[in-house]
Image (cartoon, rainbow, N blue to C red):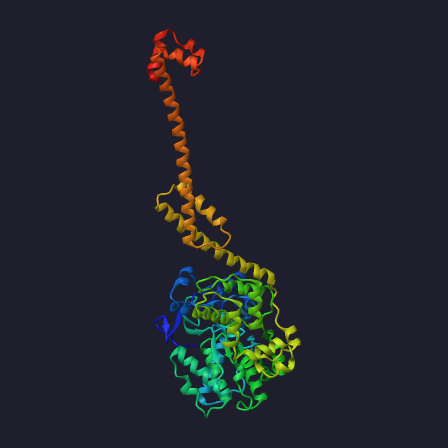
Length: 569
């Protein structure tokens, strides 16, 4: 079977393409399948946390920039991403779905080659295949993510998909030529016209964008039925090794324009079970009316349960999220995080992370614009009333906890508790994940502190301070500081400490010298007195108690005594 021939360039129509590197598989089921072996390895939990976390750069110096520049810096908050248990769950599901979907679509298997050939032949002859499956049982599994707008569904999916290069070029496998362009994932947004045919056309259009093909003109004509388009989609999914199909904004689909509930459900079941590729559908609570219970039951049999993402509860996960975000302040005056600020942020956002980030960002902007240059509870409340007024009715409904209020807003309609219980539960300890994340944050702080200490130490050495004293002085000042200290303050305090040490040292030296000089002057004075009185210096020193009588034992005669006197003089 020949796939689309790969371009020599590593950039294909704006998308980066990587050369396939095949890795040995630990799971036996995944061996001898180039589409699986070319994927990145199965990540450990720690790897996922580290790869998903995004802590944008932040320099204290930026807080002194002109307000115009700081407006741009504040928008860096949109990059901030803190992973939680549900993100680890999502990564596990996507990792498993892609690999399971490739199991029975191994391009090295004769059966798969024949199936694709039969599909191609039917398209060329204008025949319609009522089934696209061979005798082999399909292993593709899909699942659905339903949740509030702004809860972070699409962002989380994009973060996980970034682990996988979208385009992989194969040229040779185990010594044999294998020209194949693999698409590890394909993401579609439901069309606003709400039709299933429009969704199929989006599929062809996205392939054309990635590959430079002409599938939309070939297969997307209005005269073609949805069933016929589905047949072409199945063929192209195998030809290009599509690992996962993501359909976002499912709530845009219209039952009336798509032919009713039954036709829509059949369409989705066909995508998963017949085409043979995993399908991840994402939508708000409004999509529940589209994805009826019959479809959910069919999906549960495939081994993947649906994920229902609700607002974040006010627990340790929320505190971890706020602590990580709170560091990113660009007001001239830093505001310390308190439980009151955390409570207020949750109250105004109701645990919807997208709203929480925007509220924090807008509060900073307002503080900068007004010249107050400090985040306050009053400013945060004003921002909630002014900048979030469009979502305020929905937040009020969430805040009330009254089902009749929820019903007014389909996007925040309450989720059935039975579905909550049936959610896929990862065998992960949330407390352990929080511990790992806190460890990462601690390492980040330690790295920042170490860099600060090294910079100040080098500056002090350039100022010719004693290297033996510099390290101790810097660490003493840093340790003594109760609050976070900047480089300028640390340098200033360390210099002051070193100067004090130098002054004390000089003072001690001066005192020793003074004692020595005063002692020396006293002896000279006694010697002069002895000479005036025409008395032996030795005898005069004995009389004054300067030397002891026992010294006579060491002198043989008066010449020795005179020698001592001459030495002292």
